[in-house]
Image (cartoon, rainbow, N blue to C red; front, top):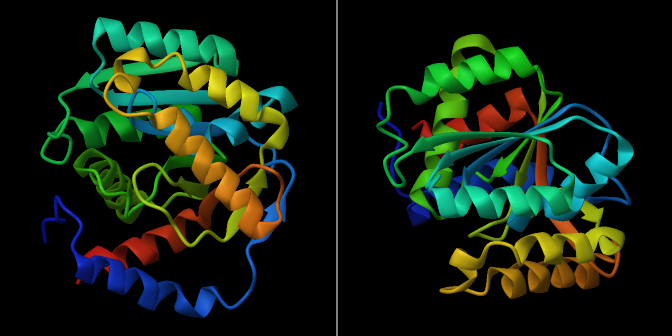
Length: 240
């Protein structure tokens, strides 16, 4: 069955049906993410910093290897912005795939490309926008990852973040001491800030997460599950 290109309300309902038994406990609050080799799957240039910039900066400061893969809209202007943001964040391993935006789901080249990246890099943690993030390309990357897991079975931990859609997170990372780096990195995406104030939106959500959870002055929220658990959630939401 072909996975849907857009999120429907029935998918959101299925998500909470699946997560309900898992949400009885309070979210885990941590001052730093767990250490390990990190792969970031960013559908667009800026999704990585909007959703997880504070936590990714902590990985870098801790000495963890971080690789960021950008799938779409890799224009010269946006690549320059990504490189400027990477200088702030401390990212040194960037890969620009250059696919067309809003065409990721039907792109037959992506599964093989993504599989090769994962096999070569062998991540312990994979960060990406969540499986209910309301953008076609964000959903498409989740669909491709789910299909690959079904074929081979991965053993990394998925940290799904908030970009377009807020979550009920089971993990909150205190990013109070890296929020300024996140703000500075976000300020480099001038082409995107011209139409939407993503800096204000992201930082406001981080402040809300910090206040409501007590995790810190600023916090980032994640759905953190093993690859197998994340696939089971995906299957419950989209696989019917």
